Image 1 (cartoon, helix red, strand yellow):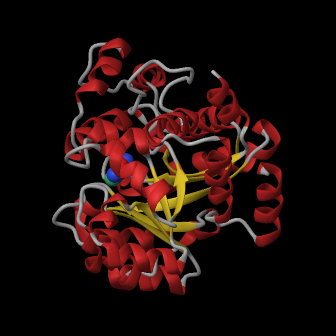
Image 2: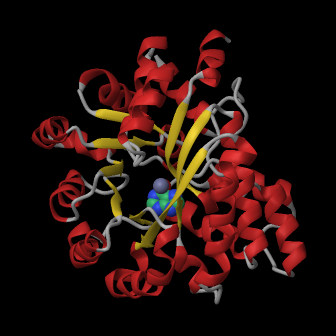
Length: 341
Ligand code: HPA
Ligand code: ZN
């Protein structure tokens, strides 16, 4: 329809997408065969069908880590990232800041020197190949704890020129951000940008900790800040961007009660700097097979527009926010924002 066509044409940045979460069932089985890896599903159709079953973060994460076990060679990582960047470009994405989970690969015996060159090759080729810019954000997985994260940062030192920033993801409840304070100080000293998942399943307090103790420049998800009106005011005053992922939140049921009401509150009733993102687009699909392909960023804009009743001007503002909240330089930001208007 008209809104879907408007969204498809809108130039946008994607700031919250896990490269491992862009692994579609087809490529998953192709790589499984190429690398001789066993998957917990018999075929791509079964893996695709299983996606509908994940109803909380932990269930999803189990499937996400199982799926990515097929990634073994530099070629695999390059193929995965390149396929995502091609699909993103086709959705009007002009700039992508892409998360990866080094520990999920290191734990399986795949070293930095294998996965990082693959991801970086795809990112470096993106302007020529697909007409968008991209950068890489290294996330630490909270389920392995702060010491493992600190060791990972030290292992990454030889590769820092290829890494734009650090983030924090995986399990949230029971892993408050303050545990990562020293790590994020070290990252800041190394000149890295900082973001963190907070307030996805976790409470508003975790969002407050990420902002005040980790010095993050964006909050990933951040939805549960709504439970603390004073925190919302602080985030508004700081112009702290939230990278919201509507279809992920819907699928993982991160808000008890009506998610649509919460999303509406975020975009209509606050002055928060909201951006729209896909999180793990190969895993989180729209509820109705809408005028969008899969769970990529445009399906997230369309779902949000439908539940919150957004018009074209509001959607353009969200797209402009995505560039403002990016780690692009001021001139590039300004050029992209001007292109949206
Ligand atoms: N939350 C936490 N960790 C993740 C996610 C998410 O939505 N996706 C991939 N890793
Ligand atoms: Zn995420």
